[in-house]
Image: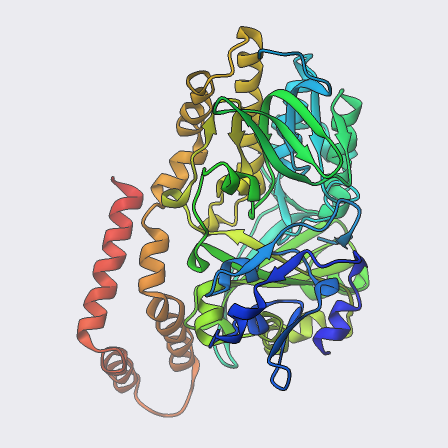
Length: 91
Length: 436
């Protein structure tokens, strides 16, 4: 089972704008890009060609791991709006 | 306060988890006005935990919960499983204790029920509302700013969970280090009630808990867990975020490995994934507890890092800290005094309770565990399985030779200096836990 299959079981109400805002300039010089590894919802993907971090914020499980793990400390992280984001039925 | 504010109440509690609900309902029962603000579409909808709540602390807040709340199963067995690459050693403690049991519950149902009860007892619950910041006037917290409006109150209690952005805003704590949290991922797997009963040796409504060491987490500060629900299994693991970063591990892949382990796989075979989830666990312990009170504000539960990770306790510390914060708020309301000095009672009462006493008892645990993770969470776990392999294998080799070889290998594979360091670390821990 892939992570996409797993995320398919989660109920979301995505917002139109991202609640996760990394400083993309700082991401360019980040060597580990650890957010792309430790995020349990594969929110972050690095595009080598465009040299840009993609933020699939719609998948976010709102755990906060990226905010703490980011070695550049550059993710402006907030909760999605009150009626948006993830809803765990079986948490 | 110098001026009369609109939207003014006596107490605002931020966060509809166990800490916030326990706090709000305590205040409402004393006849005071309290608003509980929850960011999810219902209480529990943003919450994830392993699986069990504890009856004794729950009864302190909701005495009849065992009859009324949505409970899954009464846990009658605790299994401690040490996993090797393929083998395992399992210690099991079975006892149907109805005096101080634990129950498996599902937070989306259980927290929601608690919030409904709180509502019935007078708490005003506001769902789907995010508190973006605290309003401060003359160095005193006097209210909260949501996306839509400002609410004012005499006291604000922060029960906004492990990430507590509000505690950070008012400088109650610094940035959290990766080593001070564990990242937990969990899967709830649908399985027939009958199959669960057979596989875990249970009757209907009886539950079993697995605490899992080693396996894919060998050498890392991390633990796996399994809880039986009525018709599903909760399986997951929590691993130090620092270890995941250092080893560049995807947490869900680690859980996949755990699910494949020969000791675990048969238990969840043919199950269907109902829901995947993730959450952080505060693991900093006593040394990382933030400032707990200030003028007009107190902080409870995960937001205050109140977790006793060695004993898998969190919701109980949350509820009792919430209750104590609530009782302190009531005293402050009676006196009309919301100063830092008045609210310092909260910390004093926490220190007199099992909460701070337990955190203090284990104050050195995380430092030692981090330093010795490879030995305590790797080498020795392997040795346990190695011992039983040696002890149970029949191969016509004389037993004394086998014992000698085991002891020789035990020392050789881990050099003597490291063994002494481990022993010293263990003694230091025992001393600090049992004596001083």
